[in-house]
Length: 145
Image (tube, rainbow, N blue to C red):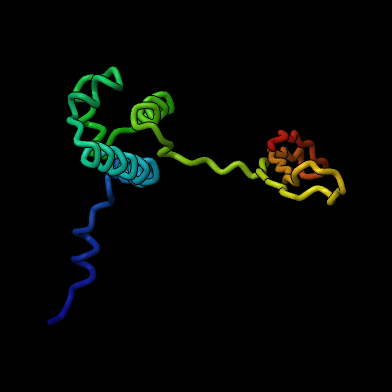
């Protein structure tokens, strides 16, 4: 079968500007849509595990059951406020943000043995260190026995 390239070139129409814009929007929305679907799955899992209806969950969030249904479809571009309210309602974090400027550490040690009759004990220090441009370290230590 012979292909007539000239006729094929004449039949090809360039994509309209609106089609190009729609494609660009769809590609740009891929990242937040994926996150929205992950959040929807986390909520669905929570509702199923705790045997909670969408209506009860909507009341906890202070939104309509229809809005919860939209969230559970995984196509809703959620605000930070809504995500925070969802986290409060489920009682755990569903979105994690890396904080490379923070480090949490725990140091445990035993004191030097002494000859007194006091029982030996261990001291545990724990705290957070915040790095300012990684050139200086400031830390706060909480003392726990």
